[in-house]
Image (tube, rainbow, N blue to C red; front, top):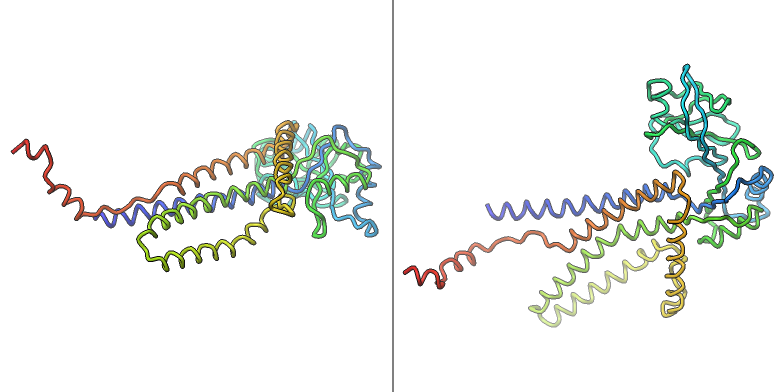
Length: 356
C-alpha cells in the first residue's frame, strides 16, 4: 500500500511540474503576441504627410527598408446602433491590426487594410448595443461615421477597432508599431535608424517587444534548468559510490549533453544580448546598465491598452516561474523502507528499558 502511495504521489508531483512548464510556454507565446514588435511612442500626434511619407519609404524597394510600420492611436468616442448609444474607447489603426490585438477573437476577424472598411467591437460593446455577441455584418456608427462590424473580440470594456487611411485627420496617430522583416537587424538602434530615415523622427518612448518576449522565454527554461541542476547534484552525490571509470563516463555524458544543448539555448537569446567576446567584461557591464535603463523607461511609460496586458502577462509568467522553481527544488516523496522501520522499532531504547 505504501508503494502505491509512493508511485501515486510521484506521478502527481511530476504531473503538476509538467503542467506548470506547459503553462509557462503557453503564457510566453501569449506575451510574445501581445508585445509585438518595437513600439515607438511620440508625445504628439504625427502629421498626415509624415505618416504617408513613412509608409511610402517602407514600401519603396530602393530604400532596402527592413521594417513594416503600423500606425495607431487610442481616443474616446461615441458608438451608436440599434437606437442605443455608448461611450467607447476606439483604437484607430493604419496597417496590421493583429499586432495590437491583446484579446482573443470570438467571431469574424479584425478589420483589414484601409479601404476595405469595417470595424471590430468588444463583447461588452456588442452586448450593450444589441444584446447579443455574434453581431458580425451589422451596422455601427462611430463618431458620425458608418462601419460594418467584421469581428467581435472578448473584452469586458466597451471598445472598438477601426482601420483608417494614412491621411486620416481623425486618427491623429501618435504611436508606431515596427515589425522586422527577415533581413532586419535586431535591436532598438536599427528601429530608431529606420524612424530617422523615414522622417518619423525620434520618439519620446521606445518599447522593445522582442526583448520582453525573450525575457518570458528565459523564464520558461529556468525551472527546467534548475530541475536539471538539482538532478545532476543528486547524481554527483550518489556517484561517490561508483567506480572511477563510471564517474568519468557519467561526467563525459553530461558535458556532451550540455554542448549539444548550448546552440539551441543561444538561438533563443536575442542577438543584442550575445557578446562578440565572452571575456569582454565591459560588454556585460554595458548590457546590465542598458537593461536597467530600459526597465526604468518601461515602468515610466504612459500605459496604453497593450502595455497593461503585457504587464499582467509578465506578472503571470513570474508567478508561474516561481511555482516551477519551487517544484524543481522540492524532491518528490521518497518510499519508506519497511524493513528499516521495523528494525528501528525493534531496537531497544531508553524508554523501553525504563518501562521494563
